[in-house]
Length: 235
Image (cartoon, rainbow, N blue to C red; front, side):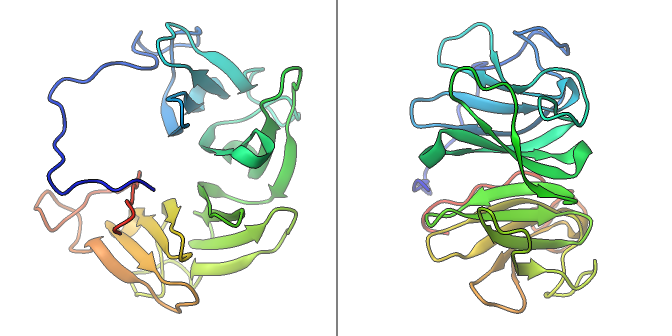
């Protein structure tokens, strides 16, 4: 996690680094962008939801490269269906993907010649992914309104946020989406249905509202369906 200066300001004019050629399935197009991640050399990896594929764009590329899926929507191991989130597992040079339409989480190697993934977790309504420094995988489950932590290979995991049905209580979530975890295993969650961002300290039984939580709206104290989330080293 980098440190974001309190004096940081957005540039008023951005530069396209991927897509930008209208909606479509060509190598220079995207069709509804889900999660994305940027690696250390500026390469962008994008969940291209409606094209059922994960795309990679290196700095300066005019066209992207399919690195997972891209064989139509389906449940074969060389296919994805509406992949919504993706992260890079540096230790294995692999992608971990929320294969939302198949209710599974798959790992897909970036090594040349690999044409299919492997299932890490099944029967999981995955809506968010994160990995901590100890390689624990954190998964938002939008059907069970919880976040669980898994060791790779573990099929059950440990609940670390929510899981008490959907609701507005501090021990509840309502359609959790993006999840971020810091070095202390503190979990931050975009609580989409409650219009708030929640912070859950390690082993906590309830969370803390850190943004929003004042209903749906446009006031500076409000959020409206928060989806993405970024947390710097200062929290």
